[in-house]
Amino acid sequence: MKSITQICALVLILMMIVSPVVADSSKVPPPKGEQCVEETEWMRIHHFETILHQRDETVLKGIRTTKHSLKNCIDCHITANEEGEYARYSNKEEHFCATCHEFAAVSIDCFHCHSDRPESAVRESIEKYKKDGINPHHGDHSSANDLILKSKLLSAQ
Amino acid sequence: MKKLVSKAYKLLRTKDTTPDQSKRSFMGGVAGAAGLAVAPGVMLYETAQAKPLDEAVTDQVRWGMLIDVNSCSDDCNACVDACNDEHGLWPDKTSMTDSQWIRKLTVRDPQTEHSQSFPVMCQHCENPPCVDVCPTGASFKRADGIVLVNMHTCIGCRYCMMACPYKARSFVHEDLHDQLPNTPRGKGCVESCNMCVHKLDAGDDTTACAQACQKDGHQAIVFGDLNDPQSEISQRLKSHGGTQIRADLGLNTGVRYQGI
Image (tube, rainbow over all chains, first blue to last red; front, top):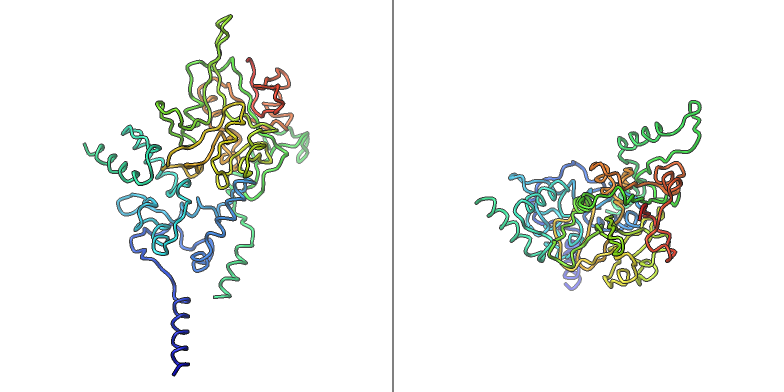
């Protein structure tokens, strides 16, 4: 009897380990390409290793291959939704990185400094801010959404 | 699963050989045309080829800038605007602490009342004091002479700002958002002119400020390789000479001035 319980517990633990951890990504717009630069399963677990490696290569040696660069990840994975808007990292339901990191409760610092959207989307927001006379470089992260709201309100007037 | 991981590792080990070929072949063509061909395939001197994306920078080049103060207009701010636009800086004129990577300086001789205006930025010293004092090694000089801050290891102590005789560095005091992909920057880090490394690494051979100055017709900023005797910057330095700001410090700056 004892061994059966042990086996059951073991099976349960194994199932927990083997079962894929997938966040709800139903609202995330699909990526540009069909296949990731590495196997998807491997990337799910190890993507930070490639990004970490690439970061030192780029900063210290000026190696800028696109395959494992964070910029390349963003350019491919962060696409516009049906309304043509690009999700920010603060959008925990639509931003590709945020959905999973929210689900796995892993907080990352990448986007305090790095861009969470492709360049064209950032340039577009900057132009909008300039038009509305808002300086996005003042105020904390949480006010980013307030700024977007303010910008929308201003352009609606 | 194990198989999958090992396969992925193998994939990872294989070198990325997909640089932007179109740009490379274009740059190669330009460089080739600039070289002096004696016979097919024989060149009088080696021309600078654009660095492939997967190769590290070397000390064969040393990037530098030459600023002709007499060509610099008092009321022109094109270089500063171009820098702000290129790197997504957004200085608020009312703020005392907002980042400035390049600034226009006006100096006046009280005796003759002769005033001059010129841009000052990180001088990209050969012996940078900011690198000497950095406790974490975040402030460093790249092989091609560009002095940078590795923001992954910068702890924001600001020793480098104190050490810099040119007041070239800024500290980011507040949270930022909407940064551009080519210029990651954030609160708690020191930053300064990076000679548009992302452009240079991509095979470009100019900076945003030099480009803007050229476009405005002043042509006061010449950017180039100080190690290449045939480059415009070396030729101009050879014929007209150049001054370093605070040359007495013996820092051997990469940014030189003419007409100060």
